[in-house]
Image (tube, rainbow, N blue to C red; front, side, top):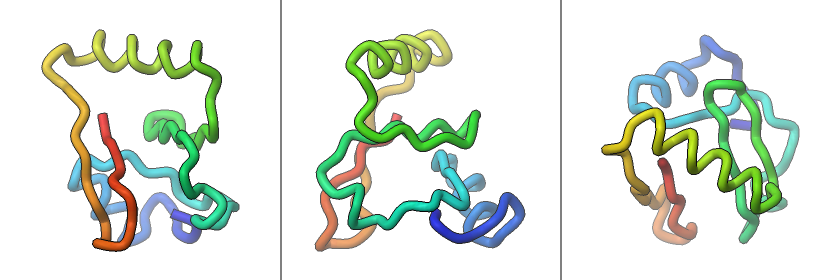
Length: 86
């Protein structure tokens, strides 16, 4: 979320829906089109085009945290590409 704080309505809703969210990211959504992102909701970080080794580290952390978790995809609007959540 570009605007908002930890206690905003958007933050409360995304937390309730288990969607990792970074609030107050100073970047336009159009600048993220077709780029690989890691949204680290634990640290509140948005990692843009991470190195392959960092992607592997996050995949390892996810599999260690909960081996039953897998990739799931959502589409926020019909004209946007799929977003894959872990």
